[in-house]
Length: 234
Ligand SMILES: [Zn+2]
Ligand SMILES: [Zn+2]
Image (cartoon, rainbow, N blue to C red; front, side, top):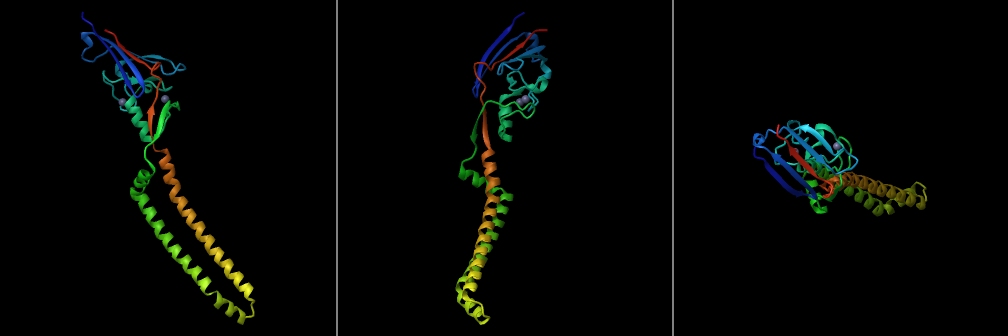
C-alpha cells in the first residue's frame, strides 16, 4: 500500500500553519476517516479535538475542503470552534468587531481606520438617508439664519424708533434699550443653540460610524499557532 505524504507550510496574515497529512489511495477521493485538528494559539484552551471529518466545517461558510485550513482561534468548542481565517477576517471586517460574538474571546488584532476623513464624509453624504437629512437641516439652517439676521437688523435699525415710541408712553429710553438688547441676546442665543444641536445631530452619527468602521487584521502568534491535520487510513 503506497502512502502519499503531504507537508505544507503556509503563512497567512501572520498566522503560520502547518499541514501534515498522510493520505492513502483509499482516501484520495477526499473521504477521510478521522481528522485530528490541533490548534495551539492559546495555552488556556484545549489544544486538540477529534471529530469525524464530515462534521468539521467552517462556522461561517459551512464548508470545508481538503486544501483549506480551519483554525480554532477562540474559546468556542465543538463544531462551532472551527473557521477559515479569511472567512473570519471578512466577517470581523463586516461587523467591525475584534471579538468572538459567541464566547466573547478578544482576538489579537490590528485595527486600521477603513476610510480617511474626506472619504468617510463623501461616503456618508452619498447615502440617500444621510443626504436627505443633511439637505433638510441645511434648508432649516438657512431659513433660521435669514430670520435671525432680519430680527437683528430690525432691532438695531429700529432702536431709535422704539425709543421715541416708548418716550410717548412715558418709558425711559434706558428701559427701552435694555429690553431690545435682552430680546437681541435671546434671539442670538436661541440661534446658536439651535445651530449647535443641528450640527451635533449631524456630526455624532457620522463620527461614530467613521471611528467604528475599521479593517481588522488578525494576529495570531506564528510560533504557537499551528494546525496539524492528519487523516488516518481506515
Ligand atoms: Zn469559511
Ligand atoms: Zn468563540
